[in-house]
Length: 396
Image 1 (spheres, rainbow, N blue to C red):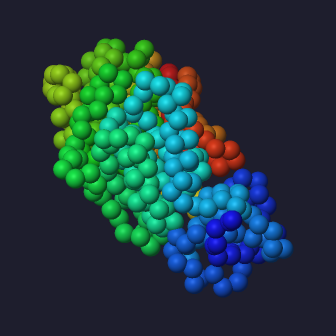
Image 2: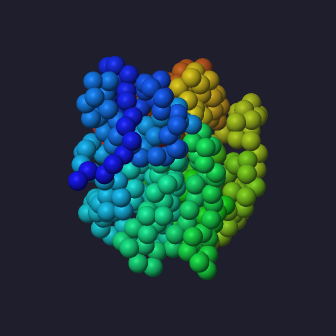
Image 3: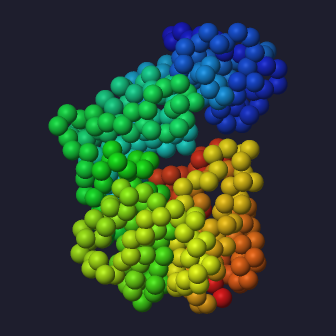
């Protein structure tokens, strides 16, 4: 017998997007009095003609008012349901790279689990929840991860701004009693000490780990600038692949400290690095105007655009940093430029850099355009799950 859930009704002709596979319903697409629902309450969605559409959760406090969990009217949203979804997501990753123990285990809507991200760092599992609906289910989520991976250290790192829009508090804590928030991880043969409570996102940008290897054939003997360097992953990969000198450019003292520690952790001599703690956007402008030159400049900024309404402003920001970087790259050098803004598509991203090159008076050749790896796969037609662009340019 089907579980009993309240009924949520769409306005006429608003069901097509969901029927085609999209996961979100916006507040202006619903009709009737639905503001009395509790944030995250499970419910069933119906068309204006009373046709069942999907089962999911609702939040009157959010512009995204309903998120799909299932298209089966008989399916109950309980621990068994969640276990099947999490286990399926985990099994997909393990089947593709059985030896890898550092991967995104669950990726929100792309794994039919909206509002949930789980990143695995060997025996550490970092759980990020961004919606009230998944917040209501999180005790089951943590129990399931423990069942699937006995001995797992669980960290609840739910600091995304989306939680404020959902009306739920920010949380940053170790859930496993007595466990340390710190761990040394190994990525591409490099060691990184991560304090998961003092780190960005879920601790380390696993989505870039394959892209770091772009430096392998080009870094030897080069002077490198790693801008927006965070804890130093790009620059340390450059040094590992033979860079003569690496300058880190990062505004945060905490992350600059982590970059120093990670350099020492890997046995690199400190004189091979410069650590510049300043606002990268301002400093890039100063450096380019001062005639500073580098063989390779790497730009991996945080997302500049958080909404489609601010896309034009974000494009100006991306153009500015790429223009400044291109002015600094010596002829025969390289620019590696990244964007994690899903609102900025690949074509627009490349177009912005081309415009920057023209204004900088430089010619560029796109050598390779990479995206996110297998464990961050894109569920079609949910193009919001495709966000990462990483482009390697040869600069004349």
